[in-house]
Each structure stands twice: as C-alpha cells, then as structure tokens.
Length: 223
Image (cartoon, rainbow, N blue to C red; front, side, top):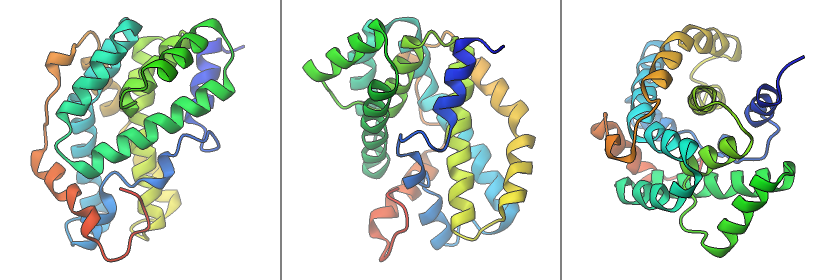
C-alpha cells in the first residue's frame, strides 16, 4: 500500500484535478507562433530552459513555504516582486487561486482549514508556487517529493500544450517526459533548503519573449 503522501501526489498530478494548469502553455504558444520553437529539437531545448528557470525562480519559494507555512505571506509578496513578466504573473496568480480553491474543496483536515482561513483573511496574490507549497505541506508531503512534483506538473503542461499546438505527437511527448526525469530529480534536489534570497531568473530572454503573449492576434492558451 502507498503512503498517504504518495496518493495525494498522484491526485495533485492528475489531469482531472481542477487547478487550471492546462489553460496555460508556459509561453510555448507565443514562442511557437514567433518561430522561436519549431520541431522536437527546439521543443526539448525549451523544456530544459524552462525547467532551469522554474528551479531558480520558483522552487526556492516552494522550499521556503514547505519548511515553514508561516512564510506564506512573505513568499507570496516576494514572488510578486520577482515577476517582471505581466503574462507570467497573471498566470501564476490564476493557477494559484484555482489550486487553492480545488485543494480546499478536495482535502479535509485541520491544516487545510488553517490555510483556507488564512487565504480568506489575507488572500494576497496567491502565486502558484506558494500555494502549491502550502497545500503540499498541509498534506504532509516530503519537501523533495513536492519539488519534483511541481516540476513534473509544469513540464507535463508544456508538453500537453505542444500536442495541442501540433508541435509533436502524444506518444513522443511521453518518451521526452521520461527522458528528462533524471534532470528534473537533480534540479529538484538542488533546491532543497533554499530560501527566498536564492530566487533569480536564469533565462531573462525567455521571460521577455513570453511577455509577448498578449500581443498575439488569436490565442489558444491564457499564457
């Protein structure tokens, strides 16, 4: 039998869990339409760059809140201040609030109730990495598992967007997701114990390109 934390990790990673992640392409749509990402080789490079960006700009916040839930407001404010890309900031808030709503509806327990109460009194910005960490900590998920799961969900969403954009087929995406697993594990492990002061942008040009999403004439995704 699996431990409760493993079961809950599966539930959070389930595509049926209504956290809103599949409405976002993490910038892939705009890079594809502008010709920056085309074909499998470019897609894999984009995945690796995105993975490193998430590791440096989001996982330290996840790690901080996982260790101390009282850091939720400080981490939320820090992530807001770090967001120079209006599109990414909007997407982070949208996914965070959707995740919080879904988690409070799905999971019962005193720590989830504390999180619900805090969010109702001082909702703040509810950025996705901060809310994700708070939910994972409330569910007693180990920090390493939470960091790896956070990366997995982001990368899976990018690959799902790639399929819907016609960049690659669904069978090939599963092979790619399997191939990048060692890199994801390594990067998640590197973020353990990090603080908000460790957050930084590792791919500023990528962040600038993603900001052009609002300028697209037609859009399939919100970001």
